[in-house]
Length: 279
Length: 256
Image (cartoon, rainbow over all chains, first blue to last red):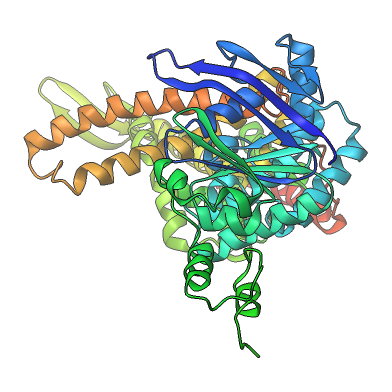
């Protein structure tokens, strides 16, 4: 265990119209892991992320970053945001510059980096996200999938310790969604803590190492996906379903087709390997 | 307008040094205005149009459409210059008796109007050349190099981006209304247009707030720093610029 990079204690947030988005939420996020925050629409995922980034100030409760309490003066916020990057759900609102290159350079230059270092980071982010050949284009000329990748590149170029993706696969076709999830996997492999929000149980099950389930702004469950997703009733209560793969595994296990003592599989291939009499 | 932007990003000169393009355009513009000779203006119009049509490869139809746009105020302007009241019968080209007055076009007025028209056209061609070959990012570079206040340059860049967002938003609201017969009758259309405007205001406000959050999350501190871009100089282009200057100055020695 590397320890927790983020800890939240008793966090509550209500919007000006009175909607209670977070209600006494306490949770911990382990460092270096791929974390999925799972919840139905309106369960408080986005509000949680905006609080983590210091964009919303909670009504009560505390956020600890590496054991240090988050404070809301300008200097502390800048320091936080240089280490914790957030990719918004709608890339349209994130892109403002007149070319992809300037967009991606915005973050690194804000960090006060020298021109040369900023350029290195821009190139790196463009190459990693596969957007190098788009760098001269204006944002309105990109497809939705490309905009998403540019939005990720623009945060990645700041080399954050934590990368948050709010519904990173929303409105993407299967191919682009897979590309984005692979990219987040690669980023995580380099040591960055990656946090995503989703309501797709299959996606969370196959990708995450740690799952946090929210319901109406409260913590419902958290832990490794194999454990969290076993509780079918809890998932149904949260407005989510059990991952298809796990459902199959449990059904086959109930009928006695699965090898004794086998742990829940994470991929279809792993499931096939657990079947009795399989070759 | 959006086609113009598309061509600016997709043409043969898009990667040329923006400084070269700007010097070329403003030299053409300056020489035409300075000499104020029909020959110079005509030469510039021909040269720029040939370049735009055959080198930059803008379709003739689109180019003509662009040129027609300013004619709406160019032609009445020139007409007003050409008309004389009362006109001298001995120098008149055209006489129109209106009641007790003799309205008409005199030869001096006519030549002044022609000169004005050609000069304006030349200036238009020059600016269209810049607009059709220079992506917005390079215009921003030019504005920064021209030492304009950063706030002005940033505002220009944001406005450019927001035009497209505003247009896309308006279009999506329009489509949403049109599919439910929002524009089926004049009465419906009037109502729909009103709520489109209101919706646009609300959405713009919401979006600007979200965008501000997006900027803050990337350590925005009130300024928009930009990466310096280095463009390659091309001796061939400079040679062409010099040739153009020689041509235009030479044309100033002739007159009709």
